[in-house]
Amino acid sequence: MSSDVFPCLNCREIINLSMSNCQYCGVAIDPAAATAAAVLQDRVAEACNGASRLKLMSRAMLFTLLISFVPFIGFAAGWAFLFFLVAIPVLLIYWWVKFRGLQTSDPDFEKARGQLVGAVVLWVVNVVLWQGLALIGSIISGSLRL
Ligand SMILES: [Zn+2]
Image (cartoon, rainbow, N blue to C red):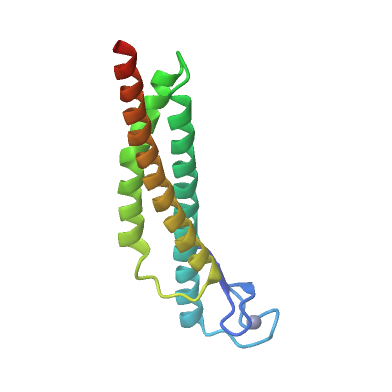
């Protein structure tokens, strides 16, 4: 999968690979460097998509944790929570292995890394909340039995 656009090495505007000169700053385009830049651009875009997807998943995980306390529909949400509990770390490791060595000064990639850290933090918060709520639940049901 390769797109035919890349950021101009001179002015950073997104331009088409088929052009011989940048349409914004007029600098001559070296086809080899341009192809490499286009490939990198694709990788950065892929990394950004993956990171924002993980952030959404960690939010959805928090949502399923809250829904799991609702009678009747809570059962399904509990299973969804367990799915996220496993899927998020697996995808995080996959992202890290695939993109950690990406050499780019693209600010979008920095943003993606920030989103990834956010997803890790939220996943940990989810697990702590889950265990904490389970503990509170067992204390309450234990004291009710007394
Ligand atoms: Zn340019």
